[in-house]
Image (cartoon, rainbow, N blue to C red; front, side):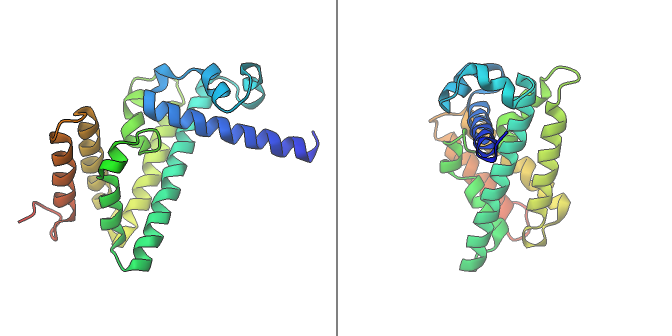
Length: 196
């Protein structure tokens, strides 16, 4: 295959992964339609198998893509925080537990969006492995913020993911904002515990 064709194929594959990643985070694995994903990026359904072996292959790679996209976003946020003198962990938590993040599930945290799909996957599915790998890398990234460490990162993730999941489930109810604010106050309190 000529180089231009290889580059174009790689570009199409990346576009399909991005579209699938967004669709899965917004609607879940069960509602992912390969034909729609291909159409969303201007490709035909017939070209799918030139890029992926199966729908499960696409989903596992889309999981990995979602985690990498969010890791890059966290790295950008950390750079901005460091440049402004803000503690990176506090900046990350404020961004994560924001209404903007709550209201953008298609570009948001893959942990929140994909945990249930991974837990419900069939035996032998590649999804739990892809999910656990992404979660592990996320914990390492968060653990490096302000020297928080792995245990603190896991507590941050569990608390923030729980708050975001519950806030999304509340829809427009004011409780959604209260959940985000309470979790943020708790996680950023000087002792890491309940704020005064």
